Image (tube, rainbow, N blue to C red):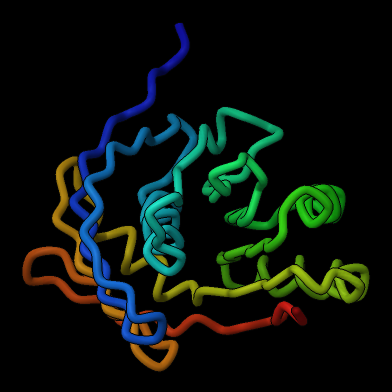
Length: 182
């Protein structure tokens, strides 16, 4: 019998001083049976970094043709495609063709570095692509914060990120491996 997704209830408060965005989002997040706590927390962090009233979690790992997070315009155009992990060059190419802006948040330490070295030259032509890496230490610490019911506070200032749950705080420094050129 197939395992079912685990449901997480998250109250995500975002204080993004870089974008002047201050809002609390009440999220019900399904954690796929193959998803780790670390990946779930990276997904929530990616949501916070791009928080917007029209930003949505998608089926993620349950759907091959959808990103983990997306934002659509009121008329249905795909404005933002957010992928996590180490997507194939083919998926990166497809997503850059579908959305106005694409952000890949990669993590995994040396594995992520090898992935980037392999595909970075083929991504140079995509002006709408950003690639941002999180260190293995940061994402491991984020994974330790996960619980089925969370009040998550994310503060963003000058590109640095502070994530807190209860009395635990993790500082994350995203590394931009590729900037969008538009």
